[in-house]
Length: 265
Image (cartoon, rainbow, N blue to C red):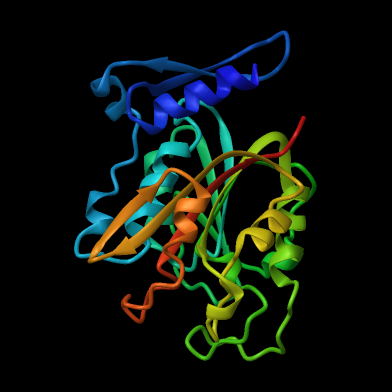
């Protein structure tokens, strides 16, 4: 079965097949994806993020499409938690797209002021998530874990440094995620020697440690080189890029890793 899963993931990554809907297996209780070769059928069920990426050059150019490809189907009832949502246009867009079936909750340690009909926002520390065990079907964490527990003037966080803030958050994510549910995580990838002052940068060892409680379903690496983001097929290929210094100052790293994780049944 694992070999079949790998083949399906590969075909999806190459845009040869697309998930058009999900159906529930009532014997096992599992939600099973239904695939199609038709691009048109796929587009009807795909979140449109073009307006969010207009004029963007940063990691969002690879993070948002990865997110879109791995969101749960808008045809199934789902509770989704967005960690580090702030008052993000992405979170709002997700809420509007899945309003018929999804309940989307965004949390952030910063004060949230906006109230929307389709979206619940709450001020909350991701290291101590205020929800009961196994309540969410999917959790989103886009360019957030690297900041948790790291003092930052830019984000108004003046607390003492918490070296394991990201690990504590992943433990909480595991707790509130349903069995069989998944997590979309994106992180700056590199070596410890290029760690930034206001956020972490993850090397291979740190990434493995961070995701150890989950099964890794997908792991994609993207490097920024000569003004463009390029996908690397292997981690070792991405490793050759991590020491490049010529990147815009607002980038977290020259390599971004996007990971889809699953909590075991």
